[in-house]
Image (cartoon, rainbow, N blue to C red; front, side, top):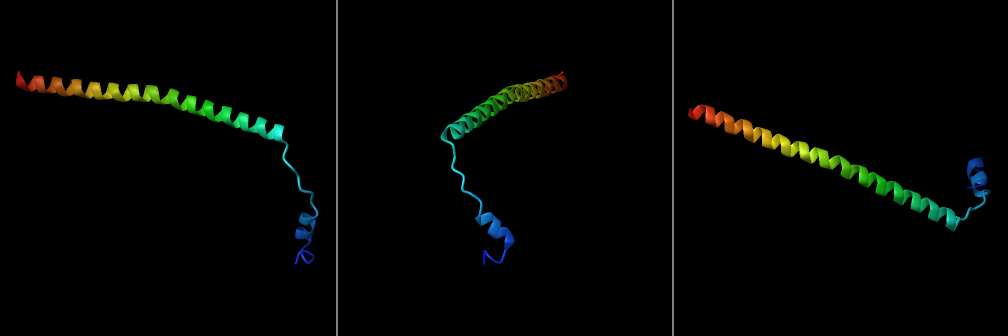
Length: 73
């Protein structure tokens, strides 16, 4: 079957590459650093969004209380 297909014959002639342990470790460390940086950026975005959400809840409670007071007087 390999002899019939020229692409498969060419692929079977390719040499098998082995991984370089030092290069693999450098790649792993770069990936870990990128993931750590992405997690840090994600945490930095959550803080302002949480603060804005709490501020919106506080503001809506304030408006609610003012409207209740206006009806009482």
